[in-house]
Length: 142
Image 1 (cartoon, rainbow, N blue to C red):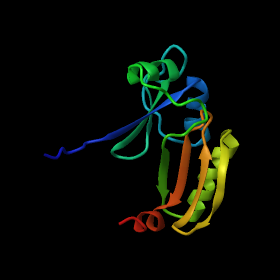
Image 2 (tube, helix red, strand yellow):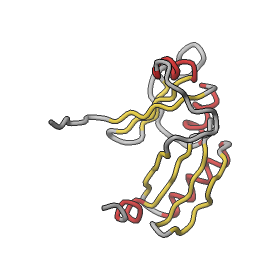
Image 3 (spheres, rainbow, N blue to C red):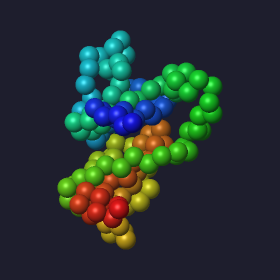
Image 4 (cartoon, rainbow, N blue to C red):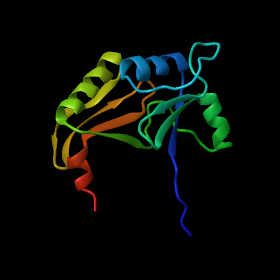
């Protein structure tokens, strides 16, 4: 049996809602929908990455509740890599530069790799984002 997916939501733990909101909305220019809560940040704190992809930024204590007692990775440890596919190498360079200006740690400067043009950064909570040229990155997969 297969299920038709209407949207994918990726949940990431964060330590500071206002810092994450500023990083993703102001720093990277991602769409962050919703009405502000008492702290000035929309609740829930979501990023719109396309027609069917969302990222939910959940405070660490709430993230632990969702895990129901399962072990949570320590800050700065990455259990997954989020990849954004952009149209051109200039777009990749621009987003990596914006991330650096907004406070990201650049893990890999943009450049040619065996699989195409990409770069990577870690957000303020240590989550790793790879940014790649779409047509190059996607064509290396079977």
